Length: 126
View (cartoon, rainbow, N blue to C red):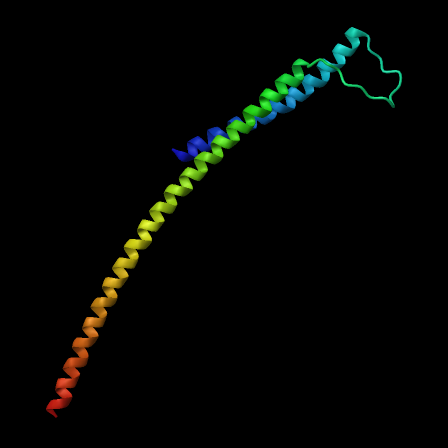
């Protein structure tokens, strides 16, 4: 299920990245068309200016970039959640294994004590 979600998220991210490229091209074309329609020709290229208008290309690009960012953040959030749940599972497994190991060592110590006791009693009989 997670691989399907990851695949869909990556597909959406690729589509959005393609959309950003297309939006950039649209913005360039729209700006050129606006200049042609308005008849704006820059005579002095050394001076720069700011226009008080916002083109549709700018708005579209901003929306697509914001959507891509939100999608990426949601994907990262889901990855972090999966890692947190795996970490909790690993901690529980580690605790369980530690308990089993301690029990095994306790049994081993008890067996060694019994063997030493038997050897001591046999050595005392001789």
